[in-house]
Image 1 (tube, one colour):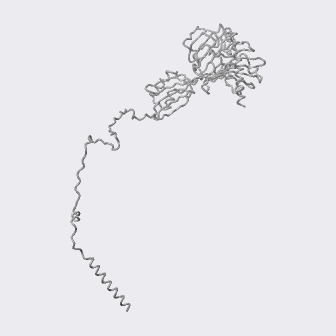
Image 2 (cartoon, helix red, strand yellow; image 1 turned 45 degrees about the vertical axis):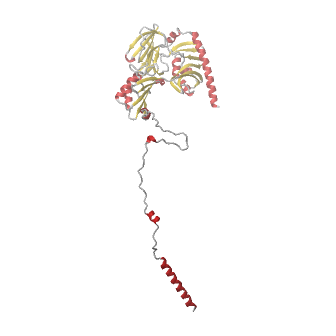
Image 3 (cartoon, rainbow, N blue to C red; image 1 turned 180 degrees about the vertical axis):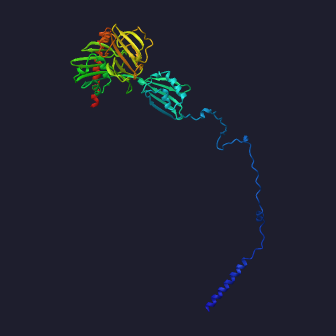
Length: 457
């Protein structure tokens, strides 16, 4: 009974719901309001084209400023083409350098450096204007600075004594001589002779070439083979031309003192370029001697020897001094020039007569001073020629002879030239030079000792 009542209630409710839905789904017949209908028909007006204002009539203003700003064009500064050009770049350079070998010419060396014939000819003319190319010798150095495509920029010839001749390429090829700024420095040293003068100097770190100068000066007074017993003391003072720490040229002796068998032999060389030296024994003037070539090496002595060219044994009638071509040659004693010319294997020769019985001969010369004439009087130390290799010679050297009554004698032992020089000597001035040399030697030796002791400490 209860179940049927519930089902009947549900059926009545469902009928009412369906009836309500049906009533709400019927479309309305009431008309739309007029205002809404007109609004649905509205469309926007077409856009008007933009209006472009005249530029001259526009003057911008600032709303919050009392001052109006006016813009005006600023003129540009003129620009020079030079201001915009790129900096020039130097091409990379290549340096080539080597020593001149024996028998080589400047042209051969420049060709080896890769230079064209036209450039070589110009360089030879430029350098030859400043330096006699006939004086080229082994040891001279050629330096070529060029671009990578072998265009030369600078050529330098380094010769003796630190002198350089430089040729620079530019609008025109120009050459100049460059000389080092040299400082003359004086040194002192002491050595003890045990076996020979040469070995003693070498051991004491003194230029060993001074052994030649001492043998030349004392050869006629001291017999080094018999008079040296060992233990003798030798003190030397010498000068060196220096470019910074580099020595230029050969050192020159200024003073030497040698103790032999209770006697003191001293030699003073002048610094006036005359080459005239004075020998003293126990403080007294013994003789005056002028070396024919300053700083030369005694390469051959008087006596029988195997000839360097012909190979057979012959009498060598003089002494030879090896030196660079062009080195000045000086008269060894006062006299009168008796001959200038050529004599067979001697080559170019100058002969000087010293009195009626003594004559000196200087052979193999490369040149003779223009002012030197036959019959002219010369003094000891006067230049009478330059070292060369004329005649029969294996290389540049001076062949020096002393002839007495036409017969050759040993130039290192003959006293006649010394006697001729002594007649012109001033003993008072010679003794003053000796005192000055002794004082300077003592001062330098003390300085060397102090410096060596300080370095050891």
